[in-house]
Length: 370
Image (cartoon, rainbow, N blue to C red):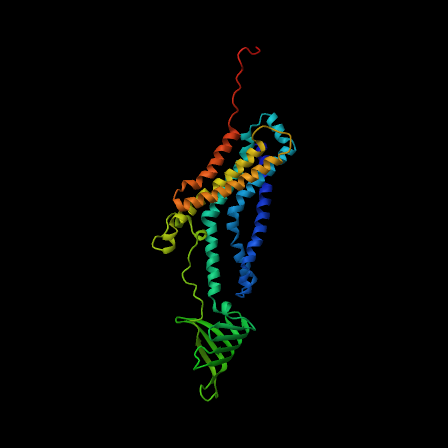
């Protein structure tokens, strides 16, 4: 790699890293707030919230990397234009291909990163996140109990806990069970612990009493106990079998839907289209880079501002991305998967031809000056 290649590469890599980090951080913070219910509703700690929020980042990178690459290419070339370095390169006989070569190297790395995120990292992290959220919501203590609050656990069952301690331990427990109108009971316990058994979760009460009211006489009977067990398996939320959405599936699961499952049968074409969209994702990195290259060093050279060209290029990548989504939607209904590859390949081919094709030779008219 020559010193010129290294110089152009350096002009692109630094802004690419900055744009990628800043944009990802901004979008991540807005997406992370959607997981705040894990703390508010289910009583999880800040560590669980941060871990679940970090699992969102791969899905953001799959979208942001190509856009960050476009921004870096445009910034690097515009800076070289502003310092008249592009003009010096052209005057020295440096071709457009030579200028584009180091930027294409960055594009290739970005395309590979986009492909890896789409086919492996994103579904892997989404699966971990979905399983964690399902486990949290299926946890009896986090979903039904709050310290210092009366919670209606189900119809006819109210639970109050003074303090919840780690390990599913509870202090100051009151359970008002009136699901059976003829046999109402109120349980008091100094402490309790939640245990998982083969038959389901059981709440073990320690040092308390049970108060019942006779149906006809209204007399209150009190039964003292040191140990008492209450079966609460019917109260535990059932996480059930997790249904994998499109973003949570690996490439093989998308391209080969399991026809024995109802969801896969009903959405087979859409799943296959999503798989092809994952495969085509690196093409957008090249398409965005070529659009940026053509906007800044394509066409006739100009000493004026390139603001209009940059604005048109930005609109072009937006239109291209929308066209890609529309093509995926059409492919998901028609089964014509080639539509997914058409928009980025068309842009890459036309931009590369316009950028690198040699200018037509000028014909000298007959009778011209010797």
